Length: 310
Image (cartoon, rainbow, N blue to C red):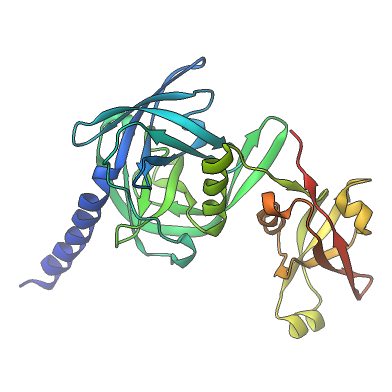
């Protein structure tokens, strides 16, 4: 057999296998809200009917209609939304829809095959394939006066179009590693990763309908660390604080403009996203150890993050 044909067949078998695995779990959503009627995609991820989609797909709605490729139509209720992660959890009223298996986007590699399943332009059950074009992208999202960067966003060249938002991005084993969230341009799609942070957000949405976030009160920009410190710690960059809000948890802890944050909670801090990653609900009221570089010396402080008010 021609090696090129054999390779193409192998590629096709993988994509076909992922499609067969995921299509029964991916829904086409019709959403009605005061803003009007909209559409999107979603994926069932628990046997009892919890469904994951993008927050912007169901913004302002409390329910709608979900339709599956096997003909099942069922109402869904919005359990909770988190605009700052662009994720929402829904629950369908129909039982027996097979759930997809969630994977871990932290294991992805650039060039790896991924498959997008969704309902672009109202075309239910559409499957496209491509590769992971880049990792670690940041996507700005807005919720009122708050702006947050969703970190570690997946960039793919798998074709995505309006209506794909909320659909599944899967690896070659059929595990969902991302939620398609935006079309950034021709040949460029983005997906919110499924990882430990996402799972924590999903868990909070399932149990309380909202996501609590903590507030530290700093703003910063990444900077390169002095070479002796790089050799000592293995860390090349830190976060130089350009703002410390007076009276904030950071201000009360003794952080100052000009400090370079190196670590918090035992984790390296390289950018603002690293701080944001620590500021989910469990951090509220808990002591957070922080190490900064100040005038050439390492200084340890402790802050107690407070609830983020909206």
